[in-house]
Amino acid sequence: MSGRGPAALCLAAALAALLPAACARRGQDLHCGACRALVDELEWEIAQVDPRKTIQMGSFRINPDGSQSVVEVPYARSEAHLTELLERVCEKMKEYGEKVDPSTHRKSYVRIISHDGTKMDLSGVKIDGDVASSLKFACESIAEEYEDELIEFLSHEADNVKDRLCSKRTEPRGKRRCPWHGSRPRRSAHGSPELTAATGTGGGCARGSAVS
Image 1 (cartoon, rainbow, N blue to C red):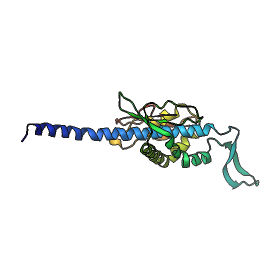
Image 2: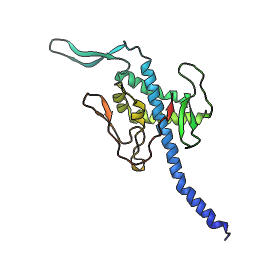
Image 3: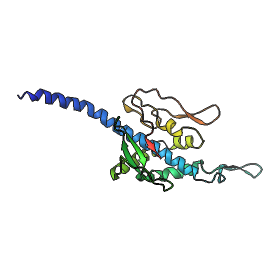
Image 4: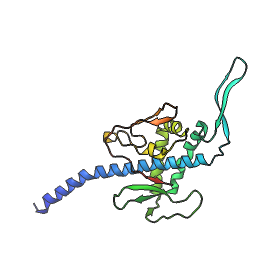
Protein backbone atom coordinates (compact mmCIF):
# COMPACT_ATOMS: atom_id res chain seq x y z
CA MET A 1 0.00 0.00 0.00
CA SER A 2 1.28 3.49 -0.80
CA GLY A 3 2.42 5.64 2.10
CA ARG A 4 -0.16 8.17 1.05
CA GLY A 5 -2.99 5.69 1.64
CA PRO A 6 -3.50 6.22 5.41
CA ALA A 7 -3.18 9.99 5.00
CA ALA A 8 -5.77 9.98 2.26
CA LEU A 9 -8.12 7.91 4.40
CA CYS A 10 -7.67 10.28 7.32
CA LEU A 11 -8.40 13.26 5.08
CA ALA A 12 -11.52 11.57 3.71
CA ALA A 13 -12.70 10.79 7.23
CA ALA A 14 -12.10 14.37 8.32
CA LEU A 15 -14.06 15.71 5.35
CA ALA A 16 -16.89 13.28 6.01
CA ALA A 17 -17.13 14.60 9.57
CA LEU A 18 -17.01 18.25 8.53
CA LEU A 19 -19.40 18.22 5.58
CA PRO A 20 -22.62 17.56 7.51
CA ALA A 21 -21.87 20.49 9.82
CA ALA A 22 -21.05 22.75 6.89
CA CYS A 23 -24.22 21.73 5.05
CA ALA A 24 -26.31 22.26 8.17
CA ARG A 25 -24.84 25.74 8.59
CA ARG A 26 -25.54 26.62 4.96
CA GLY A 27 -29.11 25.40 5.35
CA GLN A 28 -29.49 27.39 8.54
CA ASP A 29 -28.16 30.54 6.88
CA LEU A 30 -30.69 30.12 4.08
CA HIS A 31 -33.62 29.43 6.42
CA CYS A 32 -32.79 32.31 8.74
CA GLY A 33 -32.12 34.63 5.81
CA ALA A 34 -35.50 33.76 4.33
CA CYS A 35 -37.18 34.39 7.69
CA ARG A 36 -35.59 37.82 8.04
CA ALA A 37 -36.33 38.75 4.43
CA LEU A 38 -39.94 37.61 4.88
CA VAL A 39 -40.40 39.82 7.93
CA ASP A 40 -38.69 42.74 6.17
CA GLU A 41 -41.09 42.49 3.24
CA LEU A 42 -44.17 42.09 5.43
CA GLU A 43 -43.23 45.11 7.53
CA TRP A 44 -42.60 47.18 4.39
CA GLU A 45 -45.96 46.21 2.90
CA ILE A 46 -47.72 47.04 6.18
CA ALA A 47 -46.07 50.48 6.23
CA GLN A 48 -47.43 51.27 2.75
CA VAL A 49 -51.06 51.11 3.89
CA ASP A 50 -52.86 54.32 4.78
CA PRO A 51 -53.16 54.18 8.59
CA ARG A 52 -56.67 55.64 8.29
CA LYS A 53 -57.89 52.64 6.30
CA THR A 54 -60.01 50.25 8.37
CA ILE A 55 -61.82 46.95 7.98
CA GLN A 56 -64.82 45.56 9.82
CA MET A 57 -64.06 42.64 12.11
CA GLY A 58 -65.98 40.63 14.65
CA SER A 59 -69.02 38.42 14.91
CA PHE A 60 -71.76 38.80 12.34
CA ARG A 61 -74.30 37.22 14.68
CA ILE A 62 -77.44 39.27 15.19
CA ASN A 63 -77.87 40.64 18.72
CA PRO A 64 -81.29 40.64 20.46
CA ASP A 65 -81.71 44.31 19.56
CA GLY A 66 -81.11 43.52 15.89
CA SER A 67 -77.58 44.96 15.78
CA GLN A 68 -74.34 43.15 14.95
CA SER A 69 -71.19 43.00 17.10
CA VAL A 70 -68.85 44.35 14.47
CA VAL A 71 -65.90 46.65 15.10
CA GLU A 72 -63.58 48.51 12.74
CA VAL A 73 -59.84 47.85 13.06
CA PRO A 74 -56.85 49.26 11.14
CA TYR A 75 -56.54 47.40 7.86
CA ALA A 76 -52.72 47.37 7.74
CA ARG A 77 -52.28 44.78 10.51
CA SER A 78 -55.63 43.05 10.14
CA GLU A 79 -55.78 39.28 9.70
CA ALA A 80 -57.30 39.72 6.24
CA HIS A 81 -54.45 41.91 5.03
CA LEU A 82 -51.69 39.80 6.60
CA THR A 83 -53.17 36.62 5.13
CA GLU A 84 -53.26 38.22 1.69
CA LEU A 85 -49.64 39.37 2.06
CA LEU A 86 -48.44 35.91 3.09
CA GLU A 87 -49.91 34.46 -0.09
CA ARG A 88 -47.68 36.59 -2.33
CA VAL A 89 -44.82 38.04 -0.30
CA CYS A 90 -42.35 35.25 -1.12
CA GLU A 91 -42.37 36.35 -4.76
CA LYS A 92 -40.19 39.22 -3.52
CA MET A 93 -37.34 36.77 -2.90
CA LYS A 94 -36.39 37.10 -6.58
CA GLU A 95 -35.23 40.61 -5.65
CA TYR A 96 -32.57 39.25 -3.27
CA GLY A 97 -28.99 38.14 -3.73
CA GLU A 98 -26.52 36.23 -1.60
CA LYS A 99 -23.55 37.68 0.23
CA VAL A 100 -20.83 35.71 2.03
CA ASP A 101 -18.92 37.11 4.99
CA PRO A 102 -15.23 36.56 4.13
CA SER A 103 -14.24 36.05 7.77
CA THR A 104 -17.01 33.74 8.97
CA HIS A 105 -18.18 32.33 5.61
CA ARG A 106 -21.73 32.82 6.81
CA LYS A 107 -24.27 33.73 4.16
CA SER A 108 -26.73 36.59 4.30
CA TYR A 109 -29.35 37.69 1.83
CA VAL A 110 -29.70 41.27 0.67
CA ARG A 111 -32.00 43.15 -1.64
CA ILE A 112 -30.61 43.75 -5.12
CA ILE A 113 -33.47 46.09 -6.03
CA SER A 114 -34.44 48.81 -3.57
CA HIS A 115 -38.06 49.50 -2.77
CA ASP A 116 -37.73 53.15 -3.76
CA GLY A 117 -35.60 52.65 -6.85
CA THR A 118 -32.36 54.10 -5.43
CA LYS A 119 -29.08 52.58 -6.60
CA MET A 120 -27.65 49.93 -4.31
CA ASP A 121 -24.11 48.78 -3.61
CA LEU A 122 -24.02 45.19 -4.88
CA SER A 123 -20.29 44.55 -4.48
CA GLY A 124 -19.76 40.99 -3.33
CA VAL A 125 -23.40 40.05 -3.88
CA LYS A 126 -24.14 36.89 -5.85
CA ILE A 127 -27.13 37.35 -8.13
CA ASP A 128 -28.26 33.92 -9.21
CA GLY A 129 -31.53 32.28 -10.16
CA ASP A 130 -30.79 29.26 -7.98
CA VAL A 131 -30.22 31.51 -4.95
CA ALA A 132 -33.53 33.29 -5.52
CA SER A 133 -35.34 29.99 -6.05
CA SER A 134 -33.93 28.45 -2.85
CA LEU A 135 -34.75 31.58 -0.85
CA LYS A 136 -38.29 31.63 -2.23
CA PHE A 137 -38.82 27.96 -1.33
CA ALA A 138 -37.55 28.54 2.22
CA CYS A 139 -39.76 31.63 2.51
CA GLU A 140 -42.83 29.70 1.38
CA SER A 141 -42.08 26.91 3.85
CA ILE A 142 -41.89 29.40 6.74
CA ALA A 143 -45.00 31.27 5.62
CA GLU A 144 -46.99 28.04 5.40
CA GLU A 145 -45.77 26.39 8.59
CA TYR A 146 -45.92 29.51 10.76
CA GLU A 147 -48.82 31.40 9.18
CA ASP A 148 -50.85 31.63 12.40
CA GLU A 149 -47.86 32.75 14.47
CA LEU A 150 -46.79 35.36 11.91
CA ILE A 151 -50.28 36.80 11.75
CA GLU A 152 -50.61 36.85 15.53
CA PHE A 153 -47.23 38.49 16.05
CA LEU A 154 -47.46 41.06 13.24
CA SER A 155 -51.01 42.07 14.15
CA HIS A 156 -49.43 44.21 16.88
CA GLU A 157 -46.69 46.81 16.51
CA ALA A 158 -43.52 45.73 18.28
CA ASP A 159 -39.82 46.56 18.39
CA ASN A 160 -37.12 44.29 16.95
CA VAL A 161 -39.69 42.01 15.32
CA LYS A 162 -37.18 40.52 12.89
CA ASP A 163 -34.67 39.62 15.59
CA ARG A 164 -37.34 38.29 17.92
CA LEU A 165 -38.87 36.09 15.25
CA CYS A 166 -35.75 34.90 13.45
CA SER A 167 -32.80 34.90 15.84
CA LYS A 168 -33.69 32.22 18.38
CA ARG A 169 -31.30 29.34 18.89
CA THR A 170 -32.06 25.85 17.66
CA GLU A 171 -33.00 22.84 19.69
CA PRO A 172 -30.57 19.90 19.64
CA ARG A 173 -30.09 18.21 16.26
CA GLY A 174 -32.07 20.90 14.50
CA LYS A 175 -35.47 19.68 15.64
CA ARG A 176 -36.73 23.21 15.14
CA ARG A 177 -35.16 25.79 12.88
CA CYS A 178 -35.80 29.51 12.42
CA PRO A 179 -38.17 31.09 13.11
CA TRP A 180 -38.64 30.70 16.87
CA HIS A 181 -36.64 27.45 17.13
CA GLY A 182 -39.06 25.68 19.41
CA SER A 183 -40.67 28.82 20.80
CA ARG A 184 -44.22 29.89 20.19
CA PRO A 185 -45.71 33.35 20.78
CA ARG A 186 -47.58 33.64 24.06
CA ARG A 187 -49.73 36.44 25.36
CA SER A 188 -48.12 38.95 27.68
CA ALA A 189 -49.91 40.60 30.57
CA HIS A 190 -50.99 43.47 28.33
CA GLY A 191 -52.37 41.16 25.64
CA SER A 192 -49.76 41.41 22.91
CA PRO A 193 -47.88 38.29 21.75
CA GLU A 194 -44.35 37.70 22.93
CA LEU A 195 -41.87 34.86 22.60
CA THR A 196 -40.91 32.32 25.19
CA ALA A 197 -37.19 31.64 25.36
CA ALA A 198 -35.96 28.60 23.49
CA THR A 199 -33.93 26.14 25.54
CA GLY A 200 -31.96 24.41 22.81
CA THR A 201 -28.20 24.47 22.48
CA GLY A 202 -27.75 24.20 18.73
CA GLY A 203 -26.42 26.89 16.41
CA GLY A 204 -28.39 30.09 16.24
CA CYS A 205 -29.34 32.25 13.29
CA ALA A 206 -26.91 34.82 12.13
CA ARG A 207 -28.14 38.29 13.01
CA GLY A 208 -28.54 40.44 9.95
CA SER A 209 -29.32 37.50 7.68
CA ALA A 210 -31.40 39.79 5.51
CA VAL A 211 -30.99 43.42 4.69
CA SER A 212 -33.66 45.53 3.10
